[in-house]
Length: 239
Image (cartoon, rainbow, N blue to C red; front, side, top):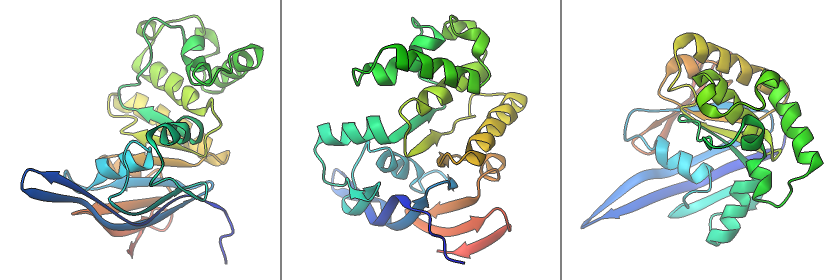
């Protein structure tokens, strides 16, 4: 059966090389992968496999040395820094291991930050922030500051903040790395719920239990795709 879902992010033969003195480090060496609307993709690999480099390119924090990276069908590989920042701010929702909340701001104010930078603060942004806070189970914490929240609650704020821009996809970097096992499960359950609602998620992790929640796991090795694992069938698919 043909999968007609639109491709929202795509690596086309992506290479990324870094010059370190007289040496050239090949962090990525010809990676091609598609992320379609509604996907839940995990990226795994040993240290030095290229996970961080792939994360940086996916998040428009870096560019390929060779090849193309398409977001929403547009090749963003050679955009200016300002244009790349626009893509980052409008098309991608980031979830970080360390939460990256602003300690002086309340939950509600932290949620409004992405729209503040776009000049879109007002009654609509406040209503949206309240809705998303309720969606992640924090309706009673709107006036609290990050230090008054547990780690799991802070990550819920971060997830809600990542959704404020209605991004094409969520990009999570070790999103449960700072959480205990019970809280980790709660956050993964929340991501499962978002996935069921049609949110597209890409999660970079070293934790196999986290990756198992995704529909597919992409395994990197020495900067190349070693295989895909279809977690729904528990079957490795050669790259």
